[in-house]
Length: 289
Length: 216
Image (tube, rainbow over all chains, first blue to last red; front, side, top):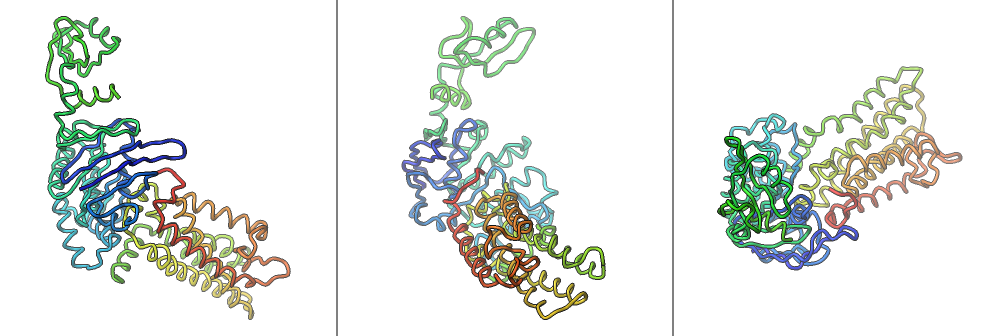
């Protein structure tokens, strides 16, 4: 169980995280928010890169404030920029990380490396130099370094940015598998990553966090506020300027525009209410906070 | 443990070949210049070879000083003693010995004197102090470029001003001693300074989450 109690982080006078309280168990939890919301700062606090200004972090019996080295042994971290060594092979890089992680037995390191390379589908790239790996392979190697010591808590910061759709799908599958045995926190600003991977989500904006135990709780926020309608071109252009109306999607068809809209009020007389998505729930939450 | 550390150094050598090899290359050039009359090999060693020890210092602290690697490195359960003390001591002993050996090799073919060994000793101590200072600066600011630049500014300032304001930590004393002083005058002070720098380096690595002076 990961517990955050009253976490605040200040850089000088600027408070970037305000009074964050959270308690989560095994499984994957999304950390969703726009750029600058404080997601990366929160992950860095959890990864022991920063120390909180106030509050406490606890993972089962370990507290961050007085058992930081113990906490570090239990954390796997994939930062946004993992900084791999291009001259090393995948195997050598993982061996390097395993040594840094204090795995002293050569046999144990070899077994763990082979296992994690299999887990991330890179077993055929053992002797390939990192500079020759694709972006997706590098991300998977990044995950491999984060799980080589079997962490209880895995922190992943915007891992799908820059991946092609196929790699993204593969990566999401990998995260789901990893979450069967541990707590995984996936920070992202892409709602699709969360909807395809997570059961629970934390939404962040300007340093504040709200926990939703189910994705449907977020979706419900936009309930009765999502509409579809077909309008002519002129009406479409006017809709873009209307207050309180947000165009989620527009597709041209036979000179008419099929629109998906987010609005508290019925935006057009012939607009029909429709089922909202996670993204629309997220947009509604962002507007309200 | 020892095997693991050796593997770690092997990976370091593989990924940081240029920075680790630079002082050795410069020392070889210095030796090659032994019979050159225009530019003495000792001058070359002092004015170019000496300060290149900042590069291997940057190489071994690369994970803490590189923009895209430090975040992961800070979050790892690394040993401050191993990374803050043992690794720099092993490395600076090697590089100090290479520089001193090069100096002796250059001086013997030119104008050997009884004081050569003392100057070589002073060079060794200055080189290890410079190495330890670079390690500390890189780890303190968690930025290799800033750490190296500050150290180079310190060294070059000392070189042009004969160590004004630097007291016994004037690192070019071995090559250009202050008036009325011998080249090995500050050996003890610089050795003690090196030990203090290593202790500070240990502290900076141990409390790496607390000491944050630069944004990530």
